[in-house]
Image 1 (cartoon, helix red, strand yellow):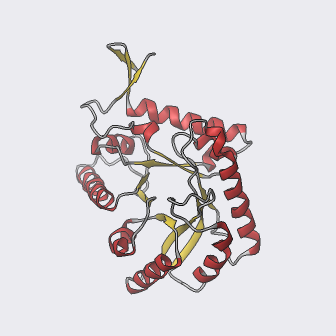
Image 2 (image 1 turned 45 degrees about the vertical axis):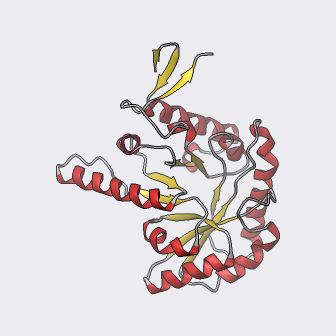
Length: 265
């Protein structure tokens, strides 16, 4: 960490290591193993250089909510990895795993599904039907999480808790969709502790679904928590957290050193 003009400047490596330590500490406080919590680096405000630096650190899970940026960044990352492989400098031992975490419109499935290791935002039966139709035509399987609107916010996408059993019953008839678990988002609040009831309700619903619905052992993913509240989410059972701002900052413009500045005051 360097100081410039009364401001702290941190590098991607420093922020990444700090974030991984915070995740590990949150897991230990909940009597969980840190390696069971997976970080998805959300690239909304990331430059390609910042993504490249995370790749160099061995990180392979990236998430995006905007279709155009998702497809462009995935192509840029693959081009970068191909170049490194050609000159014998590729350090990656695992393939990059792309997570689509935003609202997925049915007419965008064709662009998103072939890239995605996991779609976090299955929020309607109509979307499921579109995914199944496309996946069957392209002879592929698609792994999804059911997005649940636990907080009941009108402006937020997601399946109502009472409708989860019904949509899972319908997904059971769609052979090309693998239902891996659930995702939820808590309301934006200043105090992260205020998100706890939302995360606890989603965790309860997740556990209830595992014991009462037509799901298999692969139904084991609970995606909850972002930069402001991921530690609370881990305490409530999350095994995937989606973090962008804590890694990349809030501004889309970044310096040549890909650093974020924090005031000392």
